[in-house]
Image (cartoon, rainbow, N blue to C red; front, side, top):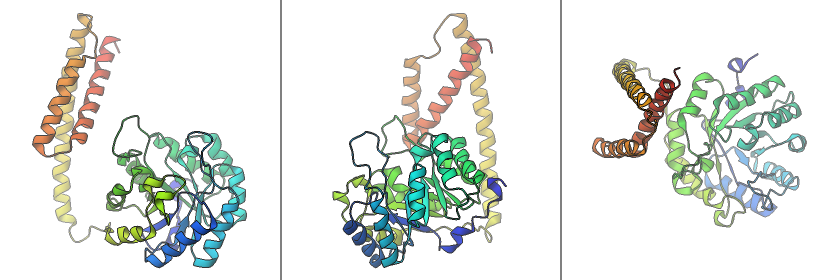
Length: 359
């Protein structure tokens, strides 16, 4: 069996979108119970309660989770309020403890997904389980690594799978904690439409004020659910305080979100006309880019002949300033235009490099 053959009927047990919510970290029994009670009373329609029991942190000596005792609190939440429960597992010990505590849904975090040895250890510990296992994208934008983690789980007969898009690390300073890089997630969704995809706006945004917009973007492109951090007192949270919201704010947020229909029947003819126009424009773009790269080849040959370095900072400054000005004039986002021109510039450098070394 391969990933494309999976049915993933497990998600049909829930209404869509499936919302998984709860605190970033389990801190105390009181905190867990209050958050669960308020989620229940808020009308947020959250069927699955999440909480981090073990917290992988960037630096040592910080709060790294309460450990196994928190599983008892998860169980109490389940018994008293009727939630399904979910937590992250990062090694075989976590898996065995979570399974013994009858946690309903497990997820593998981004720091674990990036390491095939860790994923294999977790997969072996999960061998044959019927519990849904969700895999967050790796920290770095590596689609093959993400897919490979799922293949390792399937290799151990774990068949109820899903993925979580939580964004990707970047050295650039942006408004996001982790860049969404929507195209990578959509490439996954295109290859494996049978595997449910969840958005994790908490880790993409890193701040409360962006959560609604990012979640709506995910629902606009057909994500099946969301995992979001909700705490009874977010400002006092022991981890990731800035990205957590109260249960009441969560309920209001999801009450305002629009769930999109993927069925285009009834206006598919009109849609087809628009798509035909886009395809024509895309063809023209490719032709223009091809012509641009042919000119870059000539520039590369000229630089080689005169022993000139490929990268010219002054020229890039002119290109960047032009792109910024054109973005403002056209009404398109400056960041988008900058990314496009950077990609074109990088390819131009590659073309000239090939000329320099006679490829």
